[in-house]
Length: 383
Ligand code: MRU
Image (tube, rainbow, N blue to C red; front, side, top):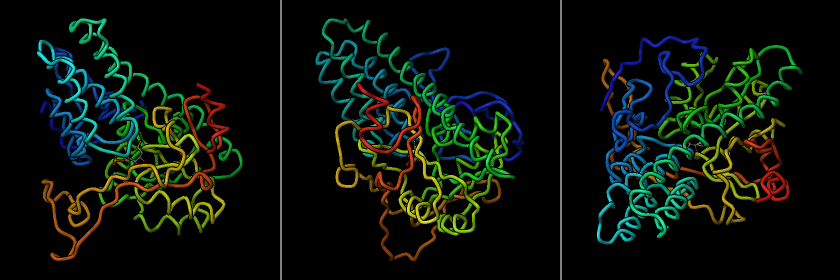
C-alpha cells in the first residue's frame, strides 16, 4: 500500500476533471519505477480514505476484482487486461506455457460474471499470448502494450460519449429555467472506468461547459456505490448533488424534480437490454411512468454481441448476504462494520438486474446516441 490519505478535509470546486485533491488520477496504472507492479485506487475505503494498493500477481488481481477493491465494468476489463500481462510475466520460462496462461485466465474469468468487459479484455490477451509466432519476450511487451491500450481506449471512449451526452443535457438546459436535474444509480463514474466514467461523462462535460446541473445520487444498497463513490467523485469535481435513499427516486420523479435519468451498464445486449446495478429496472419503470427520458451510457466494450435476450441470458451475480446484513461507516475517524439485521434472518443479494430495451430511451456511446434496438445499434457499430 503506497498512500493513505484521510479525505475529510478535501475541498469542493476543483475545476480540473478526475482529480483527487487537485492531483490527476486514473483508477489503474503501472508503477512508474517497476512495470511488474500494477497500482489501483482501493475503492473499499472511499469516501473516507484514499488508499493505493499494489498488485503483483494474478491471484492478487483476482482478489481485487472479486472483493471489489476495484469495480465497475470498464475498470474490471482494464484490470483483467493488466492481470493477464502479469500472467505473461509469471508464465515466462514455464514448461507448460499455454496451460499456465489458461490457468491465469480462468482465475480471472471466475471473479465476477456480469460485466462483459471482463471476458472481452481477457480474450484479447489470450489471443495474443497464445500466438505461437511470438516468443515469450515479445509476448510480455505486447501484452503490456495491449493492457495500456485497453485502458487508454476506455478513457477515450468515456470522454467521447460524454461529448455526445452533453448535447442531451444542453437541450434540456435550453428548454427550462434553473438547473438540469439528472438522476443516476450506482457508480458509473470515473471510479468505475479508467477515467471520466460513463453516466457521469455527460455530467462532467456539462459542468465543464458552464451548464447549471444538479445530480440526484441514488444511495444504491447494499454496497452504497452511489452514496460513497458517486457522491465523492462529483464532490471532488464541484458538481452539485444530493444523495437520496434508493426508495426516494420514484417520489422525486413524480414531483418534476428529475429531467433525465442517466445510468451505466455492465452488459448491454445488441438488442438493447441493459444489465446494471440492482435497482436500475425500478428507476426505469418510474421514469417511464413519469415520461422522463431514461438513457444508458456505455463504451462499446460493454456490448454483448452474442446474446439477444438480456433477461434470460445475462448471468446475474449473486453476492454474499453479509453485504445486506452489514454496513461500513466512519466512527471516530475509524471505518467500522456494523450489523443492521436480526441475527437469524436470511438475506439474498442479487447484484444486478436487467432493464428491457422497451424502457430505455437511448444509448449514449462513443460513436453517438442511438435507440436501444438491434437496427439502431448495428447502424452505429456495423462490424
Ligand atoms: O458491482 P459494481 O460496483 O461493479 O457494479 C458496477 C456498477 O457500478 C454499476 O452497475 C454501474 O452502473 C455500471 S458500471 C460501468
